[in-house]
Length: 393
Ligand code: AMP
Image (cartoon, rainbow, N blue to C red; front, side, top):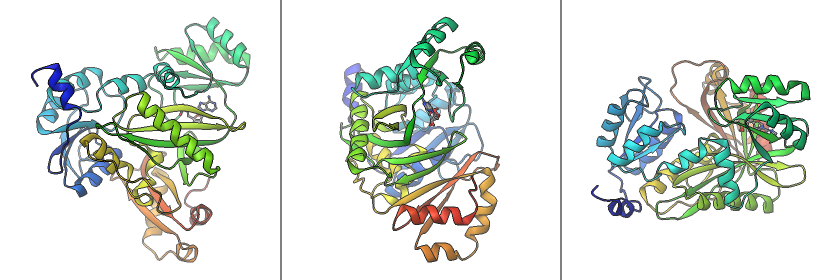
């Protein structure tokens, strides 16, 4: 590309089916993106260090480290447009890809969402509330902030945490020194949050296309076990005005942050009925997997549409659904179940749709797949899940 002007003009370009989409990362999100996009006629190539990665089984794969510049350059050369399926993209690689290829999502949203403090400030700038928080640079600042927020409260590393890692729930003032010393060892900024007594955890996935069009998916009610997503229940068991409000907040964040592609917004519904944003993910999200069979357009098709500049798809819910995650320990019992006629599903009129990601090692707690349980209502889906005895919690 010859000039900055050319680059700006290219931001809204339309990439038609037949073109090749490059994905940084080759996990399950890339796999499901490639499956949805291949159905539309796109080709896919993924960069991932693990041979025969989940995406590599359904697309072409370049086997190399994510921060390998040569491999990233090859990805750029083989792709008409580039996206990513995880957020910790190396800043140098992102800059190089932007220079050598077309990355409609840019790097700004990644930069913002890679750091909890930057993310919270951006959400507030978009006019949406987050849980009260404070930047914590010393143990004295921590003590002061704990005094302000009261106990319990949650100390988090600003970068690098996921599934509850890099967090310490401080229950008593005696823990302050140890919590600070332990998390500070990671050598990154720390943030203290007030502990939110939520009645539910919700999420909304919004899409914004390169043309500026925005659509949101129905809010999911999420249940975590050991900090890992266990269930997404849709429709969420909250009143419709709150469902719409959650969608409106997500759309406002997508607009305010100038997102392109998908942005997942995780929210707390407080006991007082207030919606506060917990965190964002600038990519397809586990809590949006329910859309694969339950919505007119899946989150993965929507992401492809958004980055390729196509009109966004209708996000209407076709059926109530509960998504249940399949972790390493659930794979064997699930495979036993799928091989036999399922009397419980027949009786309850539910259709369990099985998705497995092709990962080689079924390690304990590792996300191996999910099941979208389609039903006449979410209670029947939840009853089926409990009757299988696979997910005993
Ligand atoms: P996170 O990594 O920030 O998504 O946190 C993981 C989980 O910890 C959340 O899904 C919540 O269940 C819980 N959590 C995180 N922050 C808070 C908070 N400020 N108040 C109460 N619970 C929290």
